[in-house]
Image 1: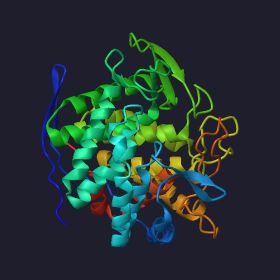
Image 2: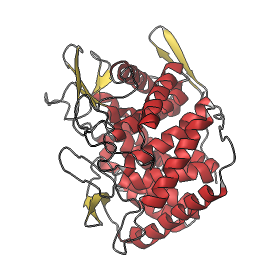
Image 3: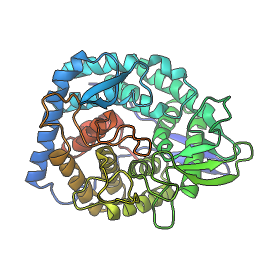
Image 4: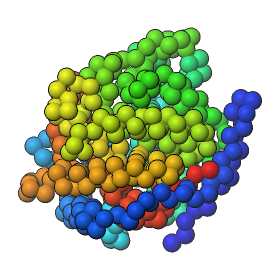
Length: 408
């Protein structure tokens, strides 16, 4: 299989220059993975593949969540459309079954109209696990070109006054025009990809500026974060923290914290900026300290009933991937050990094994607790990140082919 080359890029950022020269990240594997952990993770990946083998051929749209254990779909993919083809790609890497490759390509192709969608910041979620991965695994330039077009749509949401990417709402809609959310940090890698592939530094400059703004306003002294931070969109002046999916502006929504761990680590890998790595560690240290003994995150670490409130397994899957990445970037084996405990907990306590009707892989996820929308259901990104995390442990070279673990 021919894997596309990685390019070297120097990006001017104000008076300084960020040099992006990919080399392989140091692998902080620590001690060998215990045999029981390997068995648990392999069994979970095998279960996922068999579940997908049964369900995927009948899926012709994009799963967004479950109701009574059956997938509910969106025709255009909503913000989660990239995770279904991404999950199929992970199944292909684990199994080698070309059926999953065919289904992944067919599913990704249905996202084509979203390349020109300027109404959402979620273009990274839509196109990184689907189109960027398709290009890395096939070498077909159709996928590369489309992902770059999506990045061009995303940078139109950049607010130069506040140095941030607007999260929600159409470009001409004043509602939420100054709203920034933790999730966006995960969409920035699409911009890094576009700069790397085109040599045009403006994509990465926008990503870096947004990440610098986020690391300035989101982390609290203890490393916790709010879900939302608002700015005056006309002047860029900060207004303050807020929330939509967390318990309160002062709480810590666990999936948002996980996005931050993974996203800031990725920005370090793409730029070499040590401040991004420091921010990722601060967020990780808080989240690790907030985990309950079962290693499945509560939906909000500061909800009144935490740690005994409802769980969000999707936050655990994202956090595990971020911690594995952070361990490789820092050489700290303790991050990797926590990631392994999270993945093992998800594999042993959060899969849908006991249900004959379930169509998803991971249960015990919570989408939006304050709105009572999707509490303790299955979510497509939980399936995707669980498989990504497991394959980071069992098949790191295959994951590198798919999502590029190189760093400066």
